[in-house]
Length: 225
Image (cartoon, rainbow, N blue to C red; front, side, top):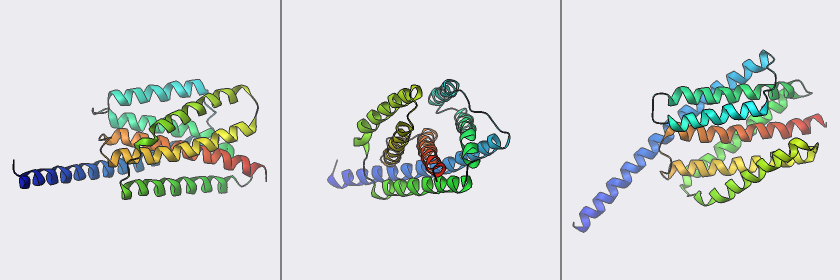
């Protein structure tokens, strides 16, 4: 094969890959917007009906079960119903926490600040990963280690009444969520994730973790005023 043909083939492959990545990004952000809106609606319903906190073991089992189902059905017609079931469940589970914040002094302001902070952080980090095209796969080990440490700390915090530990865990989870946004967006941009449903789930979990922990920290700080 001549050098010109090699260059042409390489250029064509690069162009096709760019088109595919752009398609996955568009589909991911469209579905992400829809699932976030649905999740927020489920949170609002949970707040309005006075939903009680769900046992953390039950919540975890349902969440993991839905994630396994999503992974198994990622390429089937069941993928979309499952992603809405998952995000709807997560939104409902968040309802009691949001209701508690809204019931405190300045609760609506705290909720607004947490939402705005989440949006600013997500869009800034996501835009950076998309526009620069940098490969953040090197963060994988650090992020997974940090997540395991936080999970162990959460188990310890469950048995100890240490408000400072809860705040520290929330702060660490905010940093981890920010790192995962860079990692997962980069994974899409660089062709590591080509399934827009799973890409949506990954980014949704990052946003959920970011928002819930921002809300927790701002709620504690607001209650001390």
